Image (cartoon, rainbow, N blue to C red; front, side, top):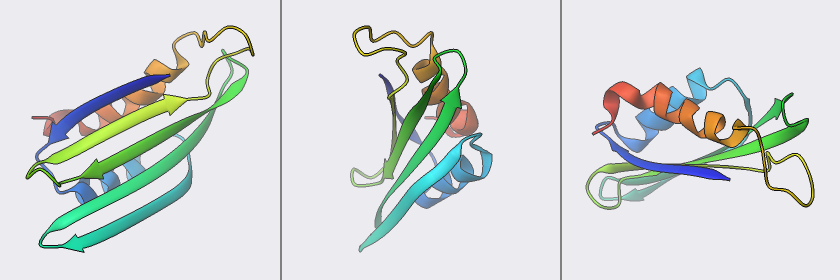
Length: 108
């Protein structure tokens, strides 16, 4: 499992739109909630097959602006090759870093 957390100078829905439009994985679920007073949260769930691990990995992306700035969290899981060993040849790091790469120029 790998995860990142960073802030961007975009609204949450703008960040999630950019991720959705540029992510090289299957979007399996998305939901968005406007909570009033300019507060917004959204979640996207992606799935991708990695040949190096012979397994599908999941990526969860959450964006919100509850603290006055847009926070983006990305968590990759399910990419390890076996039942006993949690070793994924860097697949989860790659999946998580794809979110950082997409939003790189907006990161604060």
